[in-house]
Length: 164
Image (cartoon, rainbow, N blue to C red; front, side):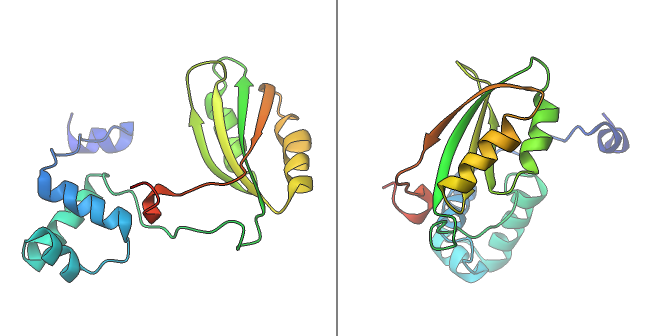
């Protein structure tokens, strides 16, 4: 498909294959998104120019979608977290996704298979705010048939080194 057609149709060229150096760079940036080009180059044993070019290629290919900060939700005033499962009306995923994305505290939205259709991670100030979010915002959506709320008691972010 010509490039101008891909741009208008929304299709993207597939990412180029990754080698061991690319994977090492990705692993390092997942652990420390603020790592300098110099430190990346030294760690994976390539020149700074090569590391810079590889990182830019990974960004251009859409392998690296962005850089972000890992937030301690409780310290940031979001003391209640929950996974909410939703059963939704068939073929309403795009509409539901847009509505969920607009919710305050929505952190992750996934279309899944199994006993429910959508898995939503939310962070709220407290349980009262969580209750209001579920009962007055999510369950009020016409496309939502049912919900189940799973409170998060403790979590570990694997990108912080808690997974190894």
